[in-house]
Amino acid sequence: MSNILKVTTPTTGYDNNAINKPNSSQQAQDLSVKNPVDPNRVVRPDGRNQANGEQNATNKGVSYESNFGNFVQSLRDLPRLEDVMTKLIFNGMANVVESGVGKGTAEEIQSLLNMLKMTPDQMTEFLKGQMAGANRMQGPLFDMLRQVMSEATTVELKAGILDFLKKYNDMSSGNHLLQNIKDTLKEMEGYMFRSDREQLAKLAEKLLPHSMNANAKNAQILKEQIIPYLGKYISETRDMGRIRDLITTLTLNTSRYENGNLERLLQSFQRLMEFPAFEKGFGGMSAADFQSMMQNVDFDRAAGKMPWVDNLLNIMGAGVRGEAGIENRDAFMNIMKAMLINESVYMPVMHVMIPAILDGVPMFSEMWVDPDEESGNSGSGERGIKLLIKFDLKDVGFFDMMMYYEKGKMDILIHYPEELSGHESEIREGIRKIMRNNNLEIEYLAVEQGKESIPVSAAFPKIFERRNSVNVTI
Image 1 (cartoon, helix red, strand yellow):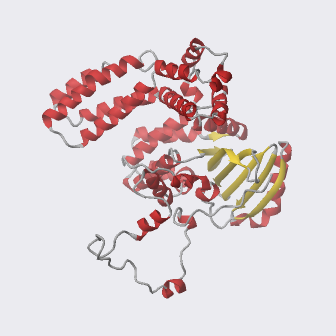
Image 2 (spheres, helix red, strand yellow):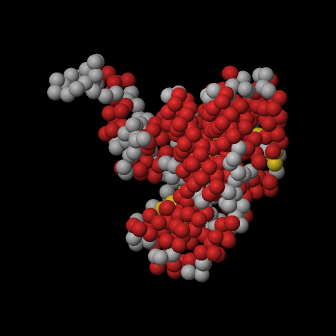
Image 3 (cartoon, helix red, strand yellow):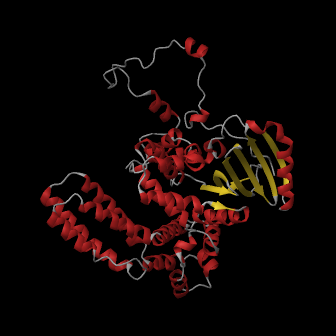
């Protein structure tokens, strides 16, 4: 196994931490005219055709007008999540409580802090739950799907598996999607006159609590009654305001909710069974067996849903609305943005965050995991697990760790805070002891004082692999 922990510097301009800026002497020597006027091209009033940043992005294969380009831009400009969360967990929550926060939110904060108190053994279970929640598509079924996908020789089979996974994802999110639909309808009522509002409320009351059996009925009510009513409302009132945006969100969630119908998933499974490669792996499973298996899945439990997450989201929502003090609103907004970016469809690695009060010591950690990392050996088909772990311990400091695991062997790079510069040998020996206790062999170990945090984009260059694919703008 080769040492693959050498941090790869991402392409210039993708990450604030990896931008190669010219020094003052280089800037002084660069006397060329920037953006000269070209009479043969349509230019802006100031004689420039595009902003330098956009021009550079285009040259590097990333258009910031595309969806992927927007993701790259957001990743570059995003504040580090640990900078914000550590302030809240270490001492900021107390400051928030003292800033005049409402009683309900104060209780949520206290409840969250109590949930985060744990011992090292409890921390292990907490981490397992977080990892389970980061990937709902796990277990023997999806292990077999990944195997069939990797061995598939036809585009049709790969497309069929992806369609199946999309339907499964929508089905497993059914309860969440229906709640979003109800919340959207409730928000719409605030933009309507009383008579229209009352009519919409009556239609919304027809929606049944979510279940696999209620999915088809709810989709029918939405498509045949609620959405046509809203279309008629817009036509009559010519309301061009916020409610039109909410209708767009409603139709999108309705489409996903209907797509998650069990019957549709079953039909997708039966179509896949027509492929010999798929039938070989699932030959012992009938359509009835598959349907019974899906009906017995507890999707919230399978996704590792944890109570503390709901508390945190409630607190974040209150903070964004300014209920935790206007001075704290930006901090909560930054947390929301960081969470959304890390869960983006363009993020090719798993991400989990781990807030905890471990034996009375507050800490916050983030972990990015690539469970299918190539080893880097020329011509090798071996793959391993690559991790980037960041954690900050109160009164101790901030750590960066990069790890690569393959066949019982580990490569490890750890950056420790400056305050521990006199304890490097102890850190090194402690890591070796932990590996020995877990029957792991260390092939490469680097322990050094960290000057700057390792950017996620530097640890996982594959984040930018999609820049050469088709970029779509909606």
